[in-house]
Image (cartoon, rainbow, N blue to C red; front, top):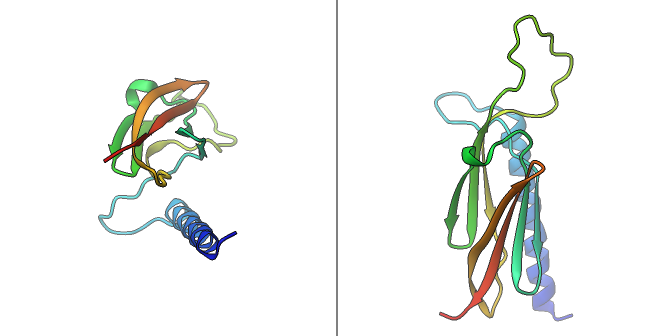
Length: 140
């Protein structure tokens, strides 16, 4: 293994840990004042193969028409509003573990040479999981 490969991997792991810490901080500590705070962030799987990048986001109870995607160079932002499911008068909530409310999840997508761009080729929502398939593109 070349030292440059090790260094790149080391920095990628460090940045990943920082992103996790930041996400947990935003998720569990509420900011005061007028700053907008998102109530939750859905869990994500990010999978890279030779010619594509696949993003899978757990969105239980979120309809397809409620989801907003913003594709940016090198990344994607997914946002939506998950409504509170139980609105019956007299209902007693014993446990609530599935989060609800507005969320926004920004993801940086991996892209190494010789690839220069990612193109969204498929978007599906099935069984509460949003799957985004990006094809790697070569060229200028």
